[in-house]
Every structure is written in C-alpha cells, then in structure tokens.
Amino acid sequence: MGDYIVLAISCILVNNILLAQYLGNCPFLGTSKKMETAVGMSMAVVFVLVLAGVITWIVEMYVLKMFGLEYLRTIAFILVIASLVQFVEMFLKKSIPALYAGLGIFLPLITTNCAVMGVVLINVNEEYNFLQAVVSSFAYAAGFGLALILFAGIRERILLARVPRPLLDTSIGLVTAGMFSLAFFAFKGMV
Amino acid sequence: MAKTIVQEFTKGLWDEIPPFRLVLGLCPTLAVTKSVENGIGMGVAFTFVLLCSNILVSALRKVIPPKVRIACFIIIIATFVTVVELLMQAYTYKLFLQLGIFIPLIVVNCIVLGRAEAFASKKGIAASFADAMGMGIGFTLALTALAAFREILGAGTFTLGNIAGWILSLVGIGTLDLWSSPLQVFGPSFQPFQFMIEAPGAFVCLGLMLCIMNLFKK
Image (cartoon, rainbow over all chains, first blue to last red; front, side):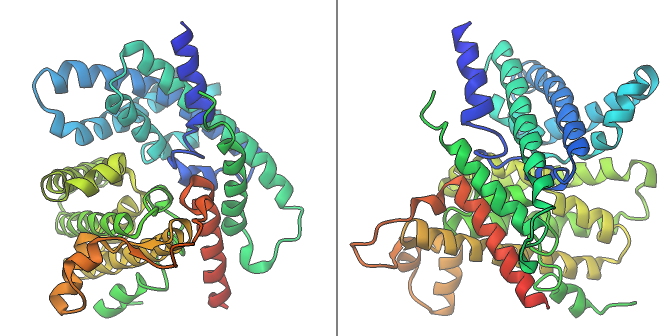
C-alpha cells in the first residue's frame, strides 16, 4: 500500500507531468486563460487518461507482448486513444448529457494531447503492473489538473496587471509557467 | 490568394515559424532543447515525418472520405513516426536513448496534424512538399536556437552532434570529431547556470524568445 502512495505522490508533485516532464503543454497554455475551461480540461483528462491507462496496459500485455509486436506500439496506442476518445464522447452524449455539456468540447482535443500518450508510454517503459499503471495514470492526470487549475488562477490575475506589450499573452504565460515550475522544482528529492 | 511554391517554403522560415508564431508543438520544444545535438536530432526526425505525411496526405486527398479524415491522417503520421523510431534505433542509438519517449510523441505533435488538416488535405503535392520543408526547417532552426541558448548558458558547452557535424564536415568546415564532441565556450572557471538546463529554464527561455520575436514583428 505504501508503495502506491509514494508512486502517487511522485507522479502528482515530484514528476508533475506539465512542469517537470514537459508533456501536455499545448492545452496547458491554450485552456488556462479562464478558470472554467481549465476545470473542464482537467476533468476530461482525468477521465480519459485513467481509461486509456487501463486499456493500453491490457493491449500491451495481451496483444503486443504476446505476439511480439512491440514495434507497432506507437500506432496501436494512438489508435486506442483516438477511438477511446470517440467512444467516450458518444457514450457521454447519449447517457450522461450533463457531463457531456461540461467536457464536450475538450474531448476531441485530448486525442492530440501528448500528456495522455506520454503517460501510457511511461507506464510501459517503467514496466508497471496493472495496479501501478492505474495509480500512475490517475496520479499524473491529477497532477495535470492541479497544475492547470492553479495556473489558470494566476493567469486570471495577470489579465489585470500591466504587462509590457511584447510580453503579452503566450510569452508572459510561459515566463509565469517557468516560475511555477521552479516552485514545483522544490519537490525534487522528496521521494 | 495563390502563393508560389517559394512563398510556401519561406513562410515556414519566418512568417509562420513553428513553435514561435504558431504556438503548437511546445512539448518537444521544451523537453529536448537541453543540448544542441538533441535539438537538431528532434528537428530532423520531425522534418522527416512532416515531409512524408504531408506528401502522402496530399496525394491521397481525393481518396480519403472527409468524415474519417482525422483518423486517416493519424494512421499515416503514426506509420512514419514508427519508421523514424526504428531508423533512429538502428543508426543513431545514443540520440534515440536521449530523446526517449519524445520520438513516439511526434505522433501527437499538433503541428504535423495541423499541417495535414489545414494545408496538405487541400493543396497539391508540390505545394505540400514546399510547406513541409519550410515548416520542418523552421522548426529545426527554432529548436537549435533555443537549445544553443540553453546549452551555452546552462552547461557552458556547445555540441553540434553527429548529424549536423557530418553535413558541415562534408562541406569542408571543421571535422566530424570536432563537431561531435562538446566545445567549451567559456574558460575552465565558468560556473554553469544550472537553472537553464532544468524545466523552469525551458519555460522562461521560450517565453523570452517569444518576446524577442514579438519585438521584431512591429
């Protein structure tokens, strides 16, 4: 049990997917201008990433490894993620319209979110067992949400500040992200 | 607004240079620019994938049904990413290990899919080729500039690496050995500015480079 807690903490804080692993930065900058979109994106990522973690683990173990097809991993995983996102979208639209209204527009974006693809590849590279893969997928997604929502809060404040013209928008966003990443850097060596 | 082939090529080098003007594909930009060698390697791999996928998408643009086009583009891109991955594993194993998961992640790079969707699926093969070349070279130059900045300040060295070193030595500038080993930029008493090599430095550097680009845009 203790191992799983350490794994979760290391995935959320120490190896935070956005700020320490450099994955998923396009949605990080793209959806962090407003709190609502940041929350929506985070929820969608948590939802899809946990499902993708489970399914890709099964695909890796019982299809790719079993038949010696590891070289097809990239193609197989991207297909799994793309069809999973489509499927989740259709399922939510039919059965849970309230949730779909919240996550709807973010779901298609997740296919090309490298956080999802990155985490499932990390799971394979680290040779996690099933439970570890589930915990790490969830924890990475939670770390994504944590960083994105905190960052959106800061960016809403920046809108009120007087920023020099050349630094406006993405540029000041990146510098802020750097400072933010410096704060998360303090967690290095914790685990 | 018909652009000539030359214009399609040159727009990727300055007007629409990716990661700066099109703020897409940030993850590899931030992650691999710890050293110039990695930056160039990533740029070359990226250019190859973009070139092949743009040509194939453009050639098949009348065959692919519009409703499932995104899925088709992703499969085409994933195929070429696998090709690059296997080629790099075979011929540049050191680089392959250093770039790690960022090679398979070219598949989810928004620039590649973006060019397929916004450009190659509408234009002819020659224009798509020029577009991919421009974007690819622009991306490689941007990565190299960012990586040079970070490596020189963060480690005090400048490593051009095997790929670019080989090309330069063919032209007759220096030798392969000279370029593939780290060059000390500063004297031996230089204290590396560690911040630049780590993640926070990556964000701040990219932010400042965007700022400089904006200054020139006026």
